[in-house]
Amino acid sequence: MRILNVAAGAVITLAAAGAAPAFAGHWGCGGHAVECYEKVRLPDVYATQARSVVVRPGYSQVVHTPPVVINRAEKVLVSPGRWHEQHVPAVVGTRTERVLVSPASRSYETLPAVTRQVHETVVVAPGHTSWQHRRGFLDHGEKLCKVHHPAVTRTVTRDVVVQPARRVAHETPAVYRTVERPVVIQPASTRRVYEAPMYGHVVRPVVISPGSQHVVSHAPVVATVRETVKVRDGGYGWSRSSGGHSGLFGHHHGGHGRGRGLFDH
Image (cartoon, rainbow, N blue to C red):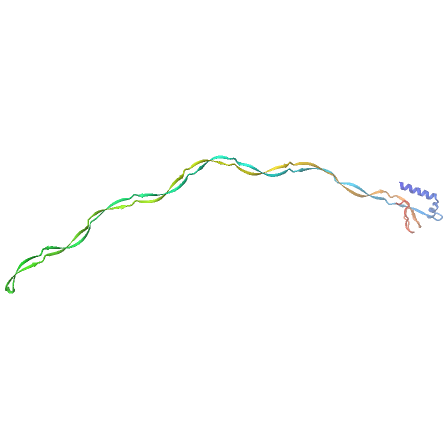
C-alpha cells in the first residue's frame, strides 16, 4: 500500500510538470515525448529468516552411582583351642629266646654176646705104647716089639665168647629252638594334650562408600533453521521506458531494453 501511494504521488508530480503531453504523444498523443513510464508487474520480495527449532526437548535423568566395594581379607577362628585325651599305644618289641623242645633222655639197649668160632684139636685118645708079638715069614721067628701109638685127635669147632652180652645206655640230647616273643617295652598310657586354635583367612566385601542417585537436567537441543519467506507481495509499479511502444501492461520491446522501474528496489 505504501509503494502504491508513492507511485501515485510521482504520477501527480509528472503531470504537474507538463509530462502529460509526453504520455499522450507516446501513446498517440500529439507532440514529442520527453520521458515515458509504463506500468509493470513487480516481483514478490523474499528474505531469508533464521528461526530456532527444538530438536530435542530438555529432560531430567536420574543417575545411579553404584556403591564402592572392595574385598578385604579377615582372620577368622576356624576351631578354638581345646584339651583332649591322647592315647599313647604300648611300645612292643621282640626278644629272642632258646626254648626247650624236648628234654634229654636215656635209653638202654641189650647187646648180645659177641662170639666167634674157634677150631681146636681135641685128643680123642691119648698116645700110648703097647707090645706087639709078631711072627716072622713062614712062621720063622717071633718078635716082640714095643710100638708107640700116637694120640688120636680130632678138630672140633666151638663158639668162643669174645664179649659177653651187656646192657648199653644211649643218651639222647635235649632239643632246643630259637623263638621270638613280643615284649612290652613301654606300656600303653593316656596323656592330656592341648590343641592350639586354628585360624583361617576369608575374603569379605566391604562397602567403602554407599551407592547414591542424583538428578541430571539436560537442556533442550535447539537448532537454527534458515527459511526463505515472502516479505512483500510484488504488485505493480511504474518503469521508465525508452523508445518504442508497448501496451499498458505489456513489456517494452525494442530500444535499449527496459529501464529500471521507478519504484523498483
